[in-house]
Length: 479
Image 1: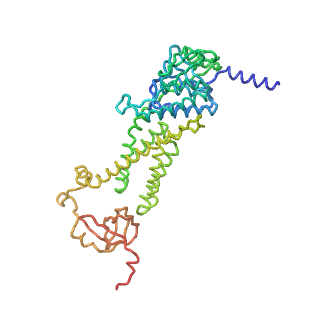
Image 2: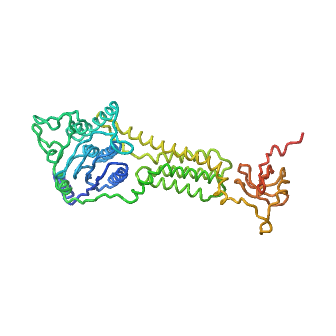
């Protein structure tokens, strides 16, 4: 008995000494930009073990249903870890905002605020509302009805209230009072939301009308709260821009790496390619899409490609595996981690969310590969004929009178068929020796090690092309 009293007293002291409450403002359209910010907020809440509760300070006209479903998954995941989440309707919670409120443990409304009107609509690409075919409309409406009913059942709200916010064909009647007539979407003011209608003994929807969040947490029994307000960072604004131009960055990255693989050493194209991929990963990491394992996968892919280019002759298993690894890591970097939570009654929406992200990631990747392939074709075919190529590559002849040592084309032609030995690795260019004379040569595309026996197969002006002598052919007896 004494032990129980001591433990109870300790808990009461802890409760009175102050508890940390995270305030997450949701003060705009629930769109992709808002999702990046909320993801980081929820991840921060998961990592902060001192948190007592979260209050979502809400003033929103609504937003995308797919994004709303992900936010609900985060809320339910944090609930499963024992963290209470409250919504404070600080002006309005319309459409998707009302659905998110139904996912929280309690709804509080500021004086004069309103909640409701959650019917799904289809937005046209250029803006405005687009008419939906009846079959598609009923499919989306049925799914959304099930979603709000499941949330209401889980949190102890009246399921018909949530359904009436979504579907104007539902009448809500409590006792003798019609709360929402058929043909209308349910909207409630703060005073209406806390009304107790017999035979019910509890408020209709909201738990109270506090003047501010401090009063809210006190009503929930959290005394001496320590408030921490979550804010958007400038890096998240940059992340939004980066994710918008993701296909463009991937395309530049692939083209830069392709050009680097076609030229000796490491230069500007490779640097641009790597920087574009790094910028892509940075933006998606800040946006809460890419995880550390995705970035690690891309880095492993680059290492495999580098090993193939600089250490292993030809282009084989390591290079192919590196390309597959890089592409796989980039696709994974575009798919967010969404917490897995038990399904709501008659609702399974998590797989639909993941399928949507996967389809978008694959579309971005295919688009980038197609554009990159077209760019590689154009570079290979037309770049040598452009003025830019002329600035990069020496096209004119230099004469001895101008102080240059000219190449003896006729002497180079006599080298065809002559055998020699490489003094350096040919990757594909390098140095070889013929009759004790050092000559700059290039291979016919293969990687050739130092001290390999070679033969000249072609000359084109100053360019001397060689190939490795096959040992079997060299040792064979003449017929």
